[in-house]
Image (cartoon, rainbow, N blue to C red; front, side, top):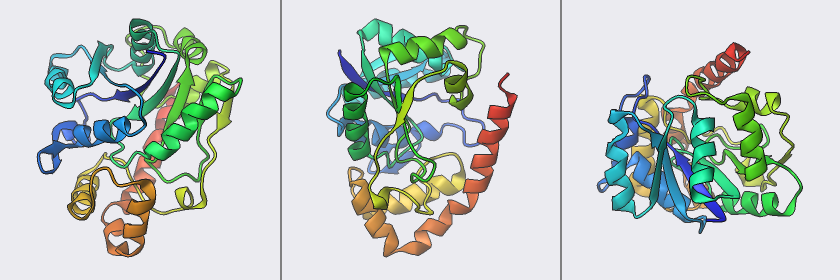
Amino acid sequence: MNSAAIVSVRNSSTRLPNKAIMEIKNNFTSIDVVIQRAKKTELPVIIATSTSKEDDIFEDIAKKNDVEIFRGPLINKIKRWYECFNKFGIQYALLVDGDDLSYSYDIGKRAISELKNKSVDMITHPKDIVTGFFTSAINEKGIKKLFSVAPTDEINTDVITRYIEKANLTTDIVPLKDFEKNENVRFTLDYKEDLEFFKKLYENLDILSSGKEILDFLNNNKHLIQINFHKQKEFLDNQAKFNESVK
């Protein structure tokens, strides 16, 4: 498996328990939506979850969606990714957050191409990207570097920004189109308001709608954006606090 889309998920969220298995539309749970969108990158998809008993449910979800599954450490997702790379012989991967229900597969395709054509360890995104559209792409060399600074199960790597810095990864930015940035929209599932937003969104759109189609719809239905965007500051503050805690 030279390249893959690795979808990171676990069922132990504190802010919104069991959010990964909540129904969004027509028996599609939130993680089903993310997996189906990840498939649109045209890469093999692997669910990367933990060995915790509460994550056993993802075995059935993997079968239902006809994708691979890898199980590793609960809180150290960097080690989970590293072990997943090794098991499947991966050289390049998109790291897809299981919370991002409107993940832009178009940006994902662009990023994996950039990664393969540039001499860098990782492709990231600019700060003005639409939240939840894209996380990152990393190669085998990059994941080894990350693992070297977070090698044990007990290290919490929920936000990896500081670990990228500590590992001295070489990075580049995925090129974005104008509509993919500077939009006050929130496409990630952390709060009950996010759940309400995604249910309303996909009540009106297909779960595989492109990022452009989704944003065009929201520009004509701006009231939907207000359902959850007010949680963005709290979301960013929590990420900043986590980064400050990493020594």
